[in-house]
Length: 474
Image (cartoon, rainbow, N blue to C red; front, top):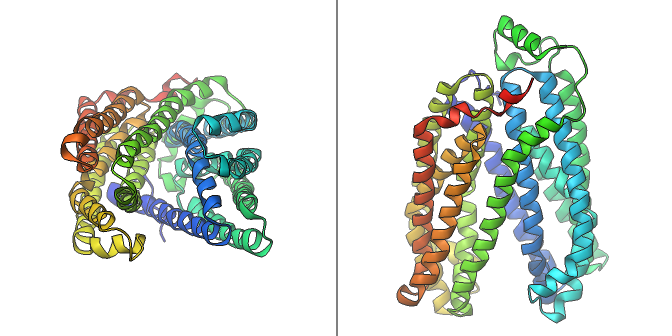
């Protein structure tokens, strides 16, 4: 498959072919998560599956921190790449890896020290507390590997290479499944085996990813490398002279670069973590309608999580596209890319709407047992029939947020996402007693649309195009 340049090729083609591996990777990850749960539930038991579930909300917060860190690193790295300042680009990568490796070690120590207290505060049932803690202890011991796996994937995406993270994700997921079967079923190690399998699989992938990245970075700035960026040689030469000492070795750590990464990373971490907390609050509203309604809603949410994958991947692609082109001084090209991405998510939205409208009953039945209560099927089908028409909103939200995030214009981006969360939580709590459980999903497109409108107004202002973070670098 041809590699498309985000700086010179058609914006639509470059965005689509960059987003496609991320879409496939995320779909594969969804599949792996389901298989992992099946293995634990079938070969260890219901309590073990519950223990993994009890740990999930806590481990998700740590992964959100890693994702936020990766976003911060990727924006700075992409802008340097777009500006052909390869030595500083390498320094930004080294700075990110050193910083977030240190953060992951500190977070691992924190988790080991306070994990049991947090589980107790979350009212984890006593009968699964020991298993949940065992899972977490192994998880926190391997946190640096899990953390760096996510950071390295973000760096590859920042360099315009979304295929390598896809291949590594497929490798990691397949290895994890094989090791799950070997340790959980074959050796009878139970929930501890599942945790060890995850750490080893992602640890090996992190090491391979690191080695591949170091090999890739060596080539940047050498004769012939960067031709896919198609920058005129005179422009490239002037950019490197402006950088200073183009043949010198990159610095391993730069505190000013770290500061710029933090400006993007911290709001992204907060936004991701707060959304996770907000979803827990919304879940508490659904819990009040009984286990059958909860089962149907859970099935609908699992399907929704698959449907939004192409939208989120498109937003991430726009973020990298924006950062590279702003680094290259081409804000007008960002606007062309934005409208190409809008057409792309519109097509995704229509396709998802048609599939869910035609096949919602069969899809819901795949997630529920045949003898499940009628309320479960009714809830799941009602949710999918309604939400099918509104996925275009989250697509538009994702690509507009992607422009702001790629530019480093994170204040409005964060505010818009907090408004989205606030609407969903407030609407669900206020109107559930009046409208029933339907209030929970009525709030979803309202939140998406509000988020999009706020971000789009900022996009129209054009102020994001003047937020290029590497301006501060000398």
